[in-house]
Length: 379
Image (cartoon, one colour):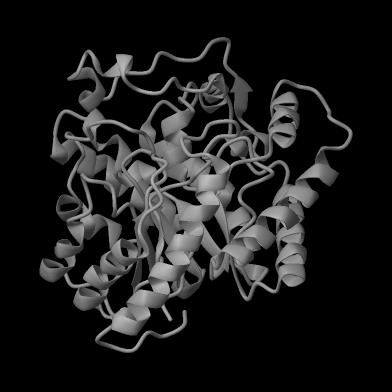
């Protein structure tokens, strides 16, 4: 049967969100560790019940998928004020768009609350060990056989946390990469699949003046990532690529065909791709012209993380088979386009709908398996 998974972050319970935000604001909530462990057990159990094959901790311990590193590495300081955000090309092109978009949660402030002001080095290596222990205990209790844990890429940390210390992008991401190596290794050494979140390899493509300039930055980021992953078995690593987890036109997104060669350089067997939103749903065709290397597999998003539609199982099956018919059913795993709670307290999808989407994905995977032209291998 086609395996299923997701991108990583899931909506945190309201009380946990408040505790995580209190920690970010410099407080020390006395029951935070206990509440995180409880939330991990709850979210792993719900994933298993919903039919998700490869589960994770929902990132319950993290304020955000990229900025959680400020609590684990040195060199980061609280910014006096959030830096001004340059409007994305697609959003700026449609001046009336903001009147029709859903308001962004005030909790998004935690995505832009830090800056790099000193040397970046590992500081709290026990945090990932606690995450691992919580996840493994929850997976054992729920009977989950396949487990992954996500971690931020060097490049995406640099996207959200401006550099005020190193003076060059190459030096900055290089320092982040070196500091993240222990976390990546700890996850793999624990027997978990490591997912490295790499929106920097696609999301910010529309912030550069040309494709050539973006590809130059991509190559720098990829070199840093591969340095951080050096020595790890590629079959225990997957990377997530997306174009920004927001509702918008996306008409300036860089196309997958123009960056796939760099993405395939990653020392990772799995490629998690945003693949069902209307701007990228057709890009399974990229693999007709650019064959997927034999040692890699793809995790196309078959459920959307920006809307409250519950995708029909037949549509999910169709999306899986589009990829399977090109790369082989044994190298396809169903996933989500992006996270459902990339920052604590920030989500476009109601939690109850998230679980309905997962249930529909599981049923779609069953239907796709029945229709597959080639055998489906368990991954």
